[in-house]
Image (cartoon, rainbow, N blue to C red; front, side):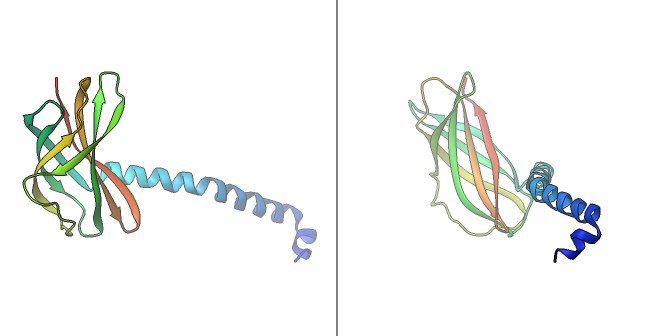
Length: 150
C-alpha cells in the first residue's frame, strides 16, 4: 500500500489532492446544478388572484400548470406574509373550497381552487403561497402565488 507512494510520490500526491478537492467541491457543484435545473424546469408555474380580503386573512384563487409528472409528489403547502421591507412571516395556507388531497398529479393545467392564507399582519404588503414537493427523494420548493395587497 505504501509502495505506490514511494515509487510515484508526485502522482500519488496529485491523486490525493484531486480526491480531496472533488470531495470538497462536488456538493457545491451538484447543488448549483440542481438549483439551475429547478429554475429552468420548475415543478409548477402557477398564479393566484385575490378573491376576498378579511381583517386578518386573504382568500386566493390559484391555478396554473404542473410541468413535472408523478415523480414530484406534493409534501406540503404553506404561506407567508411579507411586510414593506421584505421580511417574511409564517402563515397558514389552507384549501377552503374542498378538502386538500395529496393525490399524485401528472403534467397539465390545474385549477387548485380557493386558498385562505392567515394570519395576515396589518403591515403586510403581499401574501405568498409555496409548495414543497419531493422529486425522487429531493425537496423542491415552488412559489405558486405572490399577490400584492396594497
